[in-house]
Length: 353
Image 1 (spheres, rainbow, N blue to C red):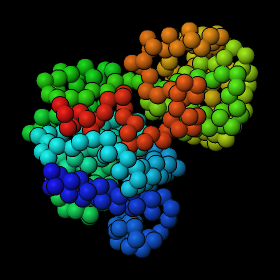
Image 2: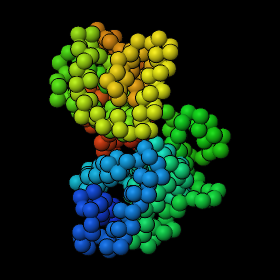
Image 3: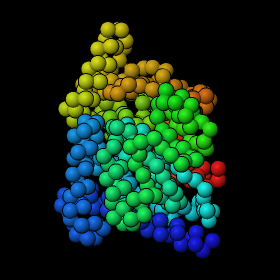
Image 4: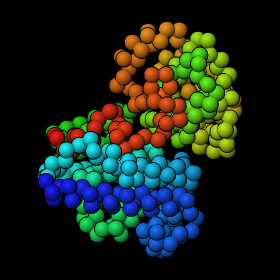
């Protein structure tokens, strides 16, 4: 038990140092000194990786990447790590060799699974998405600087995985059919398509709506925690939504986003569908929880109790709920370490099953 405690303390210290480094990256344009944990060259190399990732994938703006790094730097604090790991009784030995298959819709979207494996000191193979194959290797290189063991404990795959007994895979509903076919006989977590919703009542303030704009648009609506459906009380003025998202007006300058906006707007016009738009965001009354990029579906409700019953049947499609009966407005894109995708506790899975 003593060895387990010492090992966990050491892993935590490594993650705290990673958090300090990531914080330095977001705060300083140039090397701030050895307080960041790495040399000037190594700091510059990571900054270059951010630029390369942004150039390779035009969805990954520098601002988007830095926001993701900032969230991770906050999560990897001693306070948050202690709070997270205090929920678990970690066994002395865990017989798991893990294969992680990452999605690539957001910068570092697969990092949480990797952090879970690091915290438990597990041998981990990582299959990256081609859409996000720069940033995670850059972080792994930093970890190797902190401890050379990560050069063999954490392996990015460029070939077929071998010698694994546990799989954590994230992808589309279609990808999950392949996950089940190839890895269904292994202990596994398979994650499918999910989206997020917001419930707005007649008492929702303008300040809360301003925060909701982050939940909807911070990552262009690309993430499973991006709000794509609004449930709005029938007495609510829909124009207030557009007033709240005005701070994202610069989306109109993002070519890839606006290509989606123009396409969806054209389709709705051709189909003679009723919708509202402000030049960069379309609001459309629709029963579906899922909406395409640049579109947010909405639906009016009059009775919250009836809405709650309706949402129970859709729970497997919902990643998180914002607003009335859910998490606070403005927090959907800032999950804590203990906010697990699909509600499946990854640490519990890795230590118990």
